[in-house]
Picture 1 (cartoon, rainbow, N blue to C red):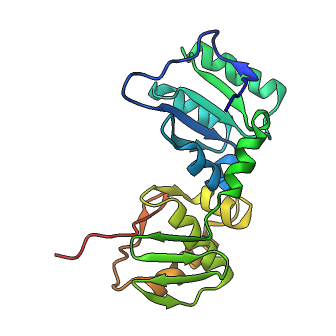
Picture 2 (picture 1 turned 90 degrees about the vertical axis):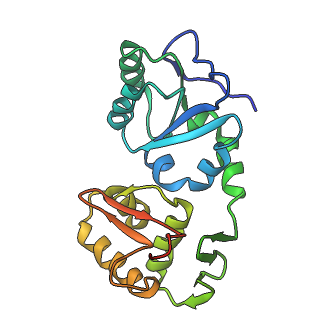
Length: 219
């Protein structure tokens, strides 16, 4: 697969260090919140998706880690903002690639075509076509929004997910009231949890939630 950079932060892209893949960061609502299939497709033997960011400002903050080799920007970013981001990246010493998803449309369309019809992870099985969910082998009845939440969690296991990310993914509005999210999570917990202390959907204080599909047994 051959791709071309719309804007390089340096004339010499970062080379992957021996023994590891190139680290990729997805930036923008299209990539950060909607293209989970694209992430699974990208995260292979040569590339490793290490983080997501919804804005260029969030992406710039990630430069401080010094671990990113490639930024993949959503098509919502154009011209001036990308140039400013690339200039800032250069000033911070970034020498990797900055690409836009519009430059590699076939990659993303191929990724979406690989979307799985069913998922098995930990105690959960989800059938995407019939929109059915089984937990520990027992089917649970879900509303459409409850199903979408569990499907999103199963695509992002073990990863702390912020409130804004979930609000964007489920309601298309990251600035919506977190209250509707709390109500939804509470409803799902009532159907999947086996104790008062949540083990599958864990609250990350002042941030969001973490989905644990195979929690450790109680001692």
